Amino acid sequence: MAIPFLKHTPIGKSTQAQPGTAAANIRYISRINATNYVYAERMPSHYWAAQDFLNKREKTIRKNGRVCDKFIISIPREMTMEQATATLRKFGFQLSKGRASFYFTIQDWNQHNPHCHFTFVDADHETGKRVFGTSEIGSTDKIKLLWQEVANRELELLGIDARIDFREAERLKAQEHDNDNELQSEPQEVPAYPVQEAPSEAPTDEFEPDPEQPIEEEPEELPEEPEMARKLSQEDWLKQLRYVSDIRHQVDRKQREYIQAETQFKHWTAEHQKATAAALVAYLKHSAAEKALWAAQQQHESTHFYGLKKGVKLFGWKSQGYKKAEAAEHGLKDASYREALLKQAHAESEAYLQLAQKRVDEYKEKLLGEERQIQRIEKVYGAQLHFEKAKDDLQDAFNELTKNVTPEHIIDMHNNGQISWAEAEEYLHYMGHDDVIAEMKKDITYH
Image 1: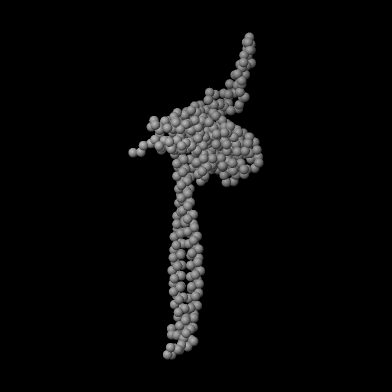
Image 2: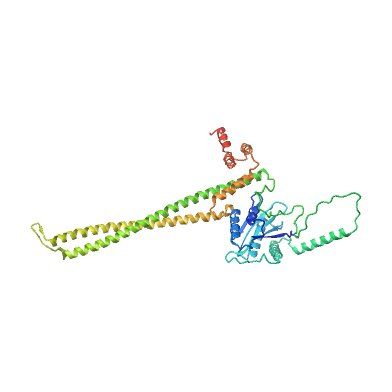
Protein backbone atom coordinates (compact mmCIF):
# COMPACT_ATOMS: atom_id res chain seq x y z
CA MET A 1 0.00 0.00 0.00
CA ALA A 2 1.30 3.46 -0.92
CA ILE A 3 1.76 5.82 2.02
CA PRO A 4 -1.52 7.67 2.72
CA PHE A 5 -0.34 11.03 4.05
CA LEU A 6 -1.91 14.44 3.46
CA LYS A 7 -1.68 17.30 5.96
CA HIS A 8 -3.96 20.32 5.44
CA THR A 9 -3.14 23.69 7.01
CA PRO A 10 -5.08 26.91 6.31
CA ILE A 11 -3.40 30.34 6.25
CA GLY A 12 -5.87 33.05 7.23
CA LYS A 13 -5.31 36.79 7.08
CA SER A 14 -6.34 37.28 10.72
CA THR A 15 -5.17 33.91 12.11
CA GLN A 16 -1.66 33.71 10.65
CA ALA A 17 1.32 34.14 12.96
CA GLN A 18 2.35 37.31 11.17
CA PRO A 19 1.66 39.05 7.84
CA GLY A 20 3.20 37.47 4.76
CA THR A 21 3.15 33.89 6.08
CA ALA A 22 1.71 32.55 2.80
CA ALA A 23 4.45 34.23 0.77
CA ALA A 24 7.11 33.02 3.22
CA ASN A 25 5.79 29.49 2.82
CA ILE A 26 6.28 29.75 -0.97
CA ARG A 27 9.84 30.86 -0.43
CA TYR A 28 10.47 27.98 1.95
CA ILE A 29 8.99 25.21 -0.22
CA SER A 30 10.81 26.48 -3.33
CA ARG A 31 14.35 26.74 -1.99
CA ILE A 32 16.78 25.69 -4.67
CA ASN A 33 18.76 23.20 -2.61
CA ALA A 34 15.71 21.10 -1.70
CA THR A 35 13.31 21.42 -4.64
CA ASN A 36 13.19 19.01 -7.58
CA TYR A 37 10.19 20.34 -9.50
CA VAL A 38 7.95 23.45 -9.58
CA TYR A 39 4.54 23.84 -11.23
CA ALA A 40 1.83 26.51 -11.09
CA GLU A 41 -1.48 27.35 -12.75
CA ARG A 42 -3.19 30.76 -12.84
CA MET A 43 -0.35 32.23 -10.78
CA PRO A 44 3.39 32.76 -11.40
CA SER A 45 5.65 29.74 -11.08
CA HIS A 46 8.79 31.56 -9.97
CA TYR A 47 8.92 31.78 -6.21
CA TRP A 48 9.40 35.55 -5.82
CA ALA A 49 6.68 36.25 -8.37
CA ALA A 50 4.42 33.76 -6.54
CA GLN A 51 5.20 35.59 -3.30
CA ASP A 52 4.11 38.88 -4.88
CA PHE A 53 0.92 37.18 -6.05
CA LEU A 54 0.03 35.97 -2.54
CA ASN A 55 1.04 39.24 -0.87
CA LYS A 56 -1.26 41.16 -3.23
CA ARG A 57 -4.08 38.72 -2.49
CA GLU A 58 -3.52 39.11 1.24
CA LYS A 59 -3.82 42.89 0.93
CA THR A 60 -7.03 42.80 -1.11
CA ILE A 61 -9.12 40.13 0.67
CA ARG A 62 -11.39 40.92 3.62
CA LYS A 63 -10.02 41.12 7.16
CA ASN A 64 -11.01 37.57 8.13
CA GLY A 65 -10.42 36.09 4.65
CA ARG A 66 -8.29 33.07 3.88
CA VAL A 67 -5.11 33.73 1.92
CA CYS A 68 -4.57 30.12 0.87
CA ASP A 69 -4.44 26.49 2.01
CA LYS A 70 -1.27 24.42 2.10
CA PHE A 71 -0.96 20.64 1.92
CA ILE A 72 1.90 18.21 2.43
CA ILE A 73 1.25 15.12 0.31
CA SER A 74 3.26 11.91 0.28
CA ILE A 75 4.00 10.74 -3.27
CA PRO A 76 3.78 6.99 -4.05
CA ARG A 77 7.35 5.78 -4.35
CA GLU A 78 6.30 3.43 -7.15
CA MET A 79 5.77 6.41 -9.51
CA THR A 80 8.36 8.10 -11.69
CA MET A 81 8.84 11.86 -11.52
CA GLU A 82 6.86 12.35 -14.76
CA GLN A 83 4.01 10.18 -13.48
CA ALA A 84 3.95 11.96 -10.13
CA THR A 85 3.88 15.45 -11.65
CA ALA A 86 1.10 14.45 -14.07
CA THR A 87 -0.92 13.01 -11.16
CA LEU A 88 -0.46 16.14 -9.06
CA ARG A 89 -1.51 18.35 -11.98
CA LYS A 90 -4.69 16.29 -12.38
CA PHE A 91 -5.33 16.56 -8.65
CA GLY A 92 -4.83 20.34 -8.86
CA PHE A 93 -7.18 20.61 -11.83
CA GLN A 94 -9.98 18.73 -10.05
CA LEU A 95 -9.38 20.55 -6.77
CA SER A 96 -9.50 23.94 -8.52
CA LYS A 97 -12.16 22.88 -11.07
CA GLY A 98 -9.94 24.57 -13.63
CA ARG A 99 -10.78 27.99 -12.14
CA ALA A 100 -8.57 28.59 -9.10
CA SER A 101 -4.84 29.12 -8.61
CA PHE A 102 -2.46 26.49 -7.29
CA TYR A 103 1.28 25.99 -6.93
CA PHE A 104 3.25 22.90 -5.95
CA THR A 105 6.82 21.74 -5.53
CA ILE A 106 8.28 18.25 -5.24
CA GLN A 107 11.07 17.61 -2.74
CA ASP A 108 13.30 14.72 -1.64
CA TRP A 109 12.64 12.86 -4.87
CA ASN A 110 15.83 10.81 -4.65
CA GLN A 111 15.57 10.43 -0.89
CA HIS A 112 13.52 8.15 1.35
CA ASN A 113 10.33 10.23 1.47
CA PRO A 114 9.43 11.97 -1.83
CA HIS A 115 6.66 14.44 -1.10
CA CYS A 116 4.80 17.45 -2.47
CA HIS A 117 4.18 20.88 -0.95
CA PHE A 118 0.90 22.08 -2.46
CA THR A 119 -0.46 25.66 -2.15
CA PHE A 120 -4.10 26.24 -3.14
CA VAL A 121 -6.05 29.52 -3.42
CA ASP A 122 -9.72 28.61 -3.09
CA ALA A 123 -11.05 31.44 -5.26
CA ASP A 124 -12.21 31.64 -8.87
CA HIS A 125 -9.53 33.62 -10.72
CA GLU A 126 -12.23 35.79 -12.35
CA THR A 127 -15.10 36.06 -9.87
CA GLY A 128 -13.24 35.48 -6.60
CA LYS A 129 -15.88 32.97 -5.41
CA ARG A 130 -14.85 29.75 -3.66
CA VAL A 131 -14.62 26.72 -5.93
CA PHE A 132 -14.00 23.86 -3.44
CA GLY A 133 -14.88 25.08 0.03
CA THR A 134 -11.67 24.41 1.96
CA SER A 135 -13.00 26.42 4.92
CA GLU A 136 -16.07 24.19 5.33
CA ILE A 137 -16.36 21.45 7.96
CA GLY A 138 -15.00 18.14 6.67
CA SER A 139 -13.05 19.74 3.84
CA THR A 140 -9.81 17.97 4.86
CA ASP A 141 -11.48 14.56 4.51
CA LYS A 142 -12.86 15.60 1.10
CA ILE A 143 -9.38 16.70 -0.03
CA LYS A 144 -7.87 13.40 1.17
CA LEU A 145 -10.59 11.46 -0.66
CA LEU A 146 -9.98 13.46 -3.85
CA TRP A 147 -6.22 12.79 -3.69
CA GLN A 148 -6.91 9.10 -3.00
CA GLU A 149 -9.24 8.82 -6.02
CA VAL A 150 -6.94 10.68 -8.42
CA ALA A 151 -3.76 8.88 -7.30
CA ASN A 152 -5.36 5.40 -7.28
CA ARG A 153 -6.86 5.93 -10.73
CA GLU A 154 -3.43 6.88 -12.07
CA LEU A 155 -1.77 3.94 -10.30
CA GLU A 156 -4.34 1.59 -11.87
CA LEU A 157 -3.84 3.07 -15.35
CA LEU A 158 -0.07 2.72 -14.96
CA GLY A 159 -0.43 -0.92 -13.95
CA ILE A 160 1.02 -0.33 -10.48
CA ASP A 161 -0.43 -2.55 -7.72
CA ALA A 162 0.04 -0.03 -4.89
CA ARG A 163 -2.99 1.92 -3.67
CA ILE A 164 -3.68 4.75 -1.22
CA ASP A 165 -6.30 4.05 1.47
CA PHE A 166 -6.74 6.66 4.20
CA ARG A 167 -9.53 4.70 5.96
CA GLU A 168 -7.42 1.56 6.24
CA ALA A 169 -4.58 3.64 7.65
CA GLU A 170 -6.95 5.14 10.22
CA ARG A 171 -8.22 1.66 11.15
CA LEU A 172 -4.67 0.35 11.61
CA LYS A 173 -3.74 3.36 13.69
CA ALA A 174 -6.83 2.97 15.87
CA GLN A 175 -6.03 -0.74 16.33
CA GLU A 176 -2.46 0.10 17.27
CA HIS A 177 -3.77 2.66 19.77
CA ASP A 178 -6.09 0.04 21.33
CA ASN A 179 -3.24 -2.46 21.62
CA ASP A 180 -1.14 0.13 23.38
CA ASN A 181 -3.96 0.77 25.84
CA GLU A 182 -4.31 -2.98 26.53
CA LEU A 183 -0.60 -3.31 27.23
CA GLN A 184 -0.71 -0.34 29.57
CA SER A 185 -3.70 -1.83 31.47
CA GLU A 186 -1.88 -5.09 32.29
CA PRO A 187 -0.12 -5.24 35.70
CA GLN A 188 3.55 -4.51 35.35
CA GLU A 189 6.38 -5.24 37.71
CA VAL A 190 7.70 -2.14 39.44
CA PRO A 191 11.49 -1.95 39.23
CA ALA A 192 13.55 -1.60 42.36
CA TYR A 193 15.29 1.47 40.98
CA PRO A 194 13.89 4.59 39.27
CA VAL A 195 13.79 4.54 35.50
CA GLN A 196 14.03 7.80 33.51
CA GLU A 197 11.38 7.64 30.80
CA ALA A 198 11.96 9.11 27.35
CA PRO A 199 9.91 12.26 26.81
CA SER A 200 6.73 11.48 24.89
CA GLU A 201 5.69 13.59 21.94
CA ALA A 202 2.26 15.21 21.74
CA PRO A 203 -0.27 13.03 19.89
CA THR A 204 -1.17 14.02 16.37
CA ASP A 205 -4.12 13.23 14.13
CA GLU A 206 -1.90 12.86 11.08
CA PHE A 207 -0.19 9.73 9.77
CA GLU A 208 3.58 9.93 9.56
CA PRO A 209 4.71 8.09 6.41
CA ASP A 210 7.92 6.87 7.97
CA PRO A 211 8.79 7.41 11.65
CA GLU A 212 12.47 7.05 10.88
CA GLN A 213 12.44 9.89 8.39
CA PRO A 214 9.28 12.00 8.63
CA ILE A 215 8.32 14.47 5.96
CA GLU A 216 9.68 17.91 6.65
CA GLU A 217 6.93 20.39 7.43
CA GLU A 218 6.82 24.10 6.72
CA PRO A 219 7.46 26.54 9.57
CA GLU A 220 4.45 28.59 10.65
CA GLU A 221 6.53 31.74 11.08
CA LEU A 222 8.57 33.60 8.51
CA PRO A 223 11.67 31.48 7.89
CA GLU A 224 15.19 32.73 7.67
CA GLU A 225 17.22 31.86 4.59
CA PRO A 226 17.37 28.03 4.85
CA GLU A 227 20.58 26.09 5.39
CA MET A 228 21.63 23.38 2.95
CA ALA A 229 19.17 20.53 3.41
CA ARG A 230 21.81 17.87 3.02
CA LYS A 231 25.47 17.43 2.26
CA LEU A 232 26.17 17.48 -1.45
CA SER A 233 28.90 15.67 -3.28
CA GLN A 234 31.36 17.96 -5.03
CA GLU A 235 29.95 16.83 -8.37
CA ASP A 236 26.36 17.70 -7.35
CA TRP A 237 27.52 20.96 -5.78
CA LEU A 238 29.33 21.98 -8.95
CA LYS A 239 26.27 20.99 -11.02
CA GLN A 240 24.05 23.30 -8.94
CA LEU A 241 26.61 26.08 -9.11
CA ARG A 242 26.75 25.83 -12.90
CA TYR A 243 22.95 25.74 -13.05
CA VAL A 244 22.66 29.00 -11.11
CA SER A 245 25.39 30.56 -13.25
CA ASP A 246 23.66 29.49 -16.50
CA ILE A 247 20.38 30.99 -15.34
CA ARG A 248 22.22 34.23 -14.51
CA HIS A 249 23.54 34.32 -18.08
CA GLN A 250 20.01 33.85 -19.43
CA VAL A 251 18.71 36.69 -17.28
CA ASP A 252 21.54 39.00 -18.38
CA ARG A 253 20.98 38.16 -22.04
CA LYS A 254 17.25 38.67 -21.84
CA GLN A 255 17.75 41.96 -20.02
CA ARG A 256 20.07 43.22 -22.77
CA GLU A 257 17.62 42.13 -25.47
CA TYR A 258 14.74 43.76 -23.66
CA ILE A 259 16.62 47.04 -23.17
CA GLN A 260 17.59 47.07 -26.86
CA ALA A 261 14.02 46.38 -27.98
CA GLU A 262 12.67 48.98 -25.56
CA THR A 263 15.21 51.56 -26.81
CA GLN A 264 14.29 50.92 -30.44
CA PHE A 265 10.61 51.04 -29.58
CA LYS A 266 11.03 54.43 -27.89
CA HIS A 267 13.12 55.71 -30.84
CA TRP A 268 10.56 54.80 -33.46
CA THR A 269 7.71 56.02 -31.32
CA ALA A 270 9.44 59.44 -31.21
CA GLU A 271 10.09 59.28 -34.96
CA HIS A 272 6.45 58.50 -35.53
CA GLN A 273 5.39 61.49 -33.44
CA LYS A 274 7.76 63.78 -35.38
CA ALA A 275 6.49 62.43 -38.70
CA THR A 276 2.91 62.94 -37.59
CA ALA A 277 3.66 66.55 -36.65
CA ALA A 278 5.46 67.14 -39.96
CA ALA A 279 2.54 65.66 -41.88
CA LEU A 280 0.13 67.96 -40.03
CA VAL A 281 2.22 71.04 -40.84
CA ALA A 282 2.49 69.98 -44.48
CA TYR A 283 -1.25 69.43 -44.63
CA LEU A 284 -1.97 72.89 -43.21
CA LYS A 285 0.48 74.51 -45.63
CA HIS A 286 -0.97 72.55 -48.51
CA SER A 287 -4.47 73.68 -47.57
CA ALA A 288 -3.28 77.29 -47.40
CA ALA A 289 -1.59 76.90 -50.79
CA GLU A 290 -4.77 75.50 -52.31
CA LYS A 291 -6.68 78.54 -51.04
CA ALA A 292 -4.01 80.88 -52.39
CA LEU A 293 -4.09 79.11 -55.78
CA TRP A 294 -7.88 79.33 -55.89
CA ALA A 295 -7.72 83.08 -55.11
CA ALA A 296 -5.04 83.59 -57.80
CA GLN A 297 -7.17 81.75 -60.34
CA GLN A 298 -10.15 83.95 -59.50
CA GLN A 299 -7.97 87.07 -59.84
CA HIS A 300 -6.65 85.79 -63.17
CA GLU A 301 -10.12 85.12 -64.52
CA SER A 302 -11.29 88.62 -63.53
CA THR A 303 -8.36 90.28 -65.32
CA HIS A 304 -8.37 88.17 -68.51
CA PHE A 305 -10.78 87.61 -71.32
CA TYR A 306 -10.38 84.36 -73.28
CA GLY A 307 -6.92 84.10 -71.79
CA LEU A 308 -5.93 87.56 -72.99
CA LYS A 309 -5.17 90.44 -70.67
CA LYS A 310 -7.80 93.06 -70.25
CA GLY A 311 -6.61 96.67 -70.59
CA VAL A 312 -4.41 98.44 -73.10
CA LYS A 313 -0.67 98.46 -73.78
CA LEU A 314 0.45 101.13 -76.25
CA PHE A 315 4.05 102.16 -76.93
CA GLY A 316 5.14 100.95 -73.50
CA TRP A 317 2.23 102.55 -71.71
CA LYS A 318 0.00 100.21 -69.73
CA SER A 319 -3.44 100.87 -68.50
CA GLN A 320 -4.39 100.05 -64.91
CA GLY A 321 -6.39 97.01 -66.06
CA TYR A 322 -3.42 95.67 -68.03
CA LYS A 323 -1.15 96.01 -64.98
CA LYS A 324 -3.66 94.05 -62.86
CA ALA A 325 -3.75 91.32 -65.50
CA GLU A 326 0.07 91.04 -65.46
CA ALA A 327 0.10 90.88 -61.65
CA ALA A 328 -2.59 88.20 -61.77
CA GLU A 329 -0.47 86.11 -64.16
CA HIS A 330 2.56 86.35 -61.85
CA GLY A 331 0.40 85.50 -58.83
CA LEU A 332 -1.09 82.47 -60.56
CA LYS A 333 2.34 81.14 -61.54
CA ASP A 334 3.68 81.71 -58.02
CA ALA A 335 0.66 80.07 -56.40
CA SER A 336 0.85 77.09 -58.77
CA TYR A 337 4.58 76.66 -58.05
CA ARG A 338 4.08 76.90 -54.28
CA GLU A 339 1.16 74.52 -54.43
CA ALA A 340 3.24 71.98 -56.41
CA LEU A 341 6.08 72.18 -53.86
CA LEU A 342 3.71 71.76 -50.93
CA LYS A 343 1.96 68.88 -52.64
CA GLN A 344 5.34 67.17 -52.94
CA ALA A 345 6.23 67.95 -49.30
CA HIS A 346 2.82 66.71 -48.22
CA ALA A 347 3.26 63.45 -50.15
CA GLU A 348 6.76 62.92 -48.74
CA SER A 349 5.54 63.60 -45.21
CA GLU A 350 2.68 61.13 -45.65
CA ALA A 351 5.11 58.51 -46.97
CA TYR A 352 7.48 59.08 -44.04
CA LEU A 353 4.55 58.87 -41.65
CA GLN A 354 3.57 55.49 -43.06
CA LEU A 355 7.19 54.30 -42.85
CA ALA A 356 7.48 55.46 -39.25
CA GLN A 357 4.20 53.76 -38.35
CA LYS A 358 5.36 50.56 -40.00
CA ARG A 359 8.60 50.61 -38.04
CA VAL A 360 6.78 51.35 -34.79
CA ASP A 361 4.51 48.37 -35.43
CA GLU A 362 7.55 46.24 -36.24
CA TYR A 363 9.28 47.13 -32.97
CA LYS A 364 6.07 46.68 -31.03
CA GLU A 365 5.97 43.13 -32.39
CA LYS A 366 9.62 42.64 -31.47
CA LEU A 367 8.94 43.89 -27.97
CA LEU A 368 6.03 41.47 -27.63
CA GLY A 369 8.32 38.75 -28.92
CA GLU A 370 10.80 39.53 -26.17
CA GLU A 371 8.05 39.34 -23.57
CA ARG A 372 6.89 35.98 -24.95
CA GLN A 373 10.46 34.69 -24.86
CA ILE A 374 10.76 35.78 -21.25
CA GLN A 375 7.51 34.00 -20.42
CA ARG A 376 8.86 30.80 -21.97
CA ILE A 377 11.55 30.67 -19.29
CA GLU A 378 9.37 31.94 -16.47
CA LYS A 379 10.21 28.82 -14.46
CA VAL A 380 13.67 30.31 -14.14
CA TYR A 381 12.88 33.84 -13.00
CA GLY A 382 9.21 34.57 -13.58
CA ALA A 383 7.20 36.21 -16.33
CA GLN A 384 7.60 39.75 -15.02
CA LEU A 385 10.41 41.91 -16.28
CA HIS A 386 11.98 42.32 -12.81
CA PHE A 387 15.47 41.47 -13.98
CA GLU A 388 17.34 43.10 -11.13
CA LYS A 389 15.23 41.29 -8.55
CA ALA A 390 15.76 38.02 -10.39
CA LYS A 391 19.52 38.60 -10.35
CA ASP A 392 19.39 39.40 -6.64
CA ASP A 393 17.60 36.12 -5.99
CA LEU A 394 20.14 34.24 -8.08
CA GLN A 395 22.95 35.96 -6.20
CA ASP A 396 21.34 34.81 -2.93
CA ALA A 397 21.26 31.24 -4.26
CA PHE A 398 24.90 31.57 -5.34
CA ASN A 399 25.86 32.92 -1.91
CA GLU A 400 24.07 30.00 -0.24
CA LEU A 401 26.03 27.51 -2.34
CA THR A 402 29.40 29.20 -1.74
CA LYS A 403 29.03 30.35 1.88
CA ASN A 404 31.72 27.87 3.05
CA VAL A 405 33.83 28.10 -0.11
CA THR A 406 37.10 30.05 -0.21
CA PRO A 407 38.93 31.46 -3.25
CA GLU A 408 41.53 28.72 -2.71
CA HIS A 409 38.85 26.07 -3.30
CA ILE A 410 37.94 27.65 -6.63
CA ILE A 411 41.59 27.98 -7.65
CA ASP A 412 42.27 24.34 -6.75
CA MET A 413 39.31 23.22 -8.84
CA HIS A 414 40.69 25.21 -11.77
CA ASN A 415 44.20 23.81 -11.30
CA ASN A 416 42.78 20.27 -11.11
CA GLY A 417 40.92 20.75 -14.40
CA GLN A 418 37.44 20.53 -12.84
CA ILE A 419 36.43 23.98 -14.05
CA SER A 420 37.67 26.28 -16.79
CA TRP A 421 39.38 29.61 -16.23
CA ALA A 422 36.22 31.41 -17.41
CA GLU A 423 34.19 29.55 -14.78
CA ALA A 424 36.73 30.24 -12.05
CA GLU A 425 36.78 33.94 -12.94
CA GLU A 426 32.99 34.11 -12.95
CA TYR A 427 32.59 32.30 -9.61
CA LEU A 428 35.24 34.45 -7.94
CA HIS A 429 33.56 37.59 -9.29
CA TYR A 430 30.15 36.56 -7.92
CA MET A 431 31.84 35.73 -4.60
CA GLY A 432 33.28 39.25 -4.48
CA HIS A 433 36.94 38.31 -5.01
CA ASP A 434 37.89 40.53 -7.96
CA ASP A 435 41.26 41.14 -6.27
CA VAL A 436 42.03 37.41 -6.51
CA ILE A 437 41.08 37.47 -10.21
CA ALA A 438 43.53 40.32 -10.79
CA GLU A 439 46.32 38.40 -9.05
CA MET A 440 45.56 35.25 -11.02
CA LYS A 441 45.65 37.13 -14.33
CA LYS A 442 49.18 38.29 -13.54
CA ASP A 443 50.31 34.66 -13.35
CA ILE A 444 48.64 33.58 -16.59
CA THR A 445 50.88 33.32 -19.64
CA TYR A 446 49.07 33.90 -22.95
CA HIS A 447 50.32 32.08 -26.05
